[in-house]
Image 1: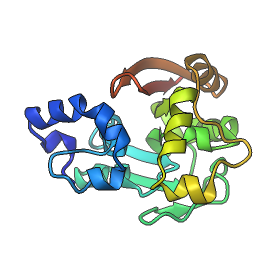
Image 2: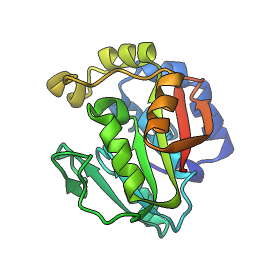
Image 3: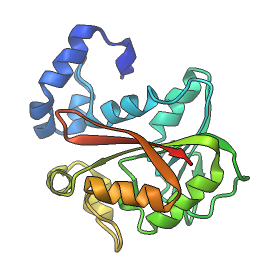
Length: 209
């Protein structure tokens, strides 16, 4: 799958226009169609463009570690951690709030569609604060609760949802005020928030204050 930045303008517009249809088609099929980009890849590329190429990055709840792999490919440094042994993960941990890194180890910490799946999210955000350098950045994506619920119920091809399911403490998504409160409690100041993918996906960028 080619990164979005390597796609021409016509293909990028086509992917945006076809988004409603792409939501109905199983994502593994979309991944095999030349020119089309999965919703997961769109989220990853949106986050990637906000990470400086030479930054050190920690991706929490990294899944298949696609973000970090792309970041390394352009010369950056990073590591992906997860509590589940997905293929490609760099470090499997028991608790994302207790990570084996020194204080101020990273320029940015990312959560791509993962914070809602972390039951102890307050503690994990405090850990992200500890690990970030002064002026470091947290970047996260999430959905509103209702679209997230509908998507999780529909995505029948997703093993994570239909074999593991939603565990105690996990939620389907967050309202805007909930995300801002979570980040504020951990010591972060939100400096940018925007929607993309027809307004369905929310991006937040917050600084270590």
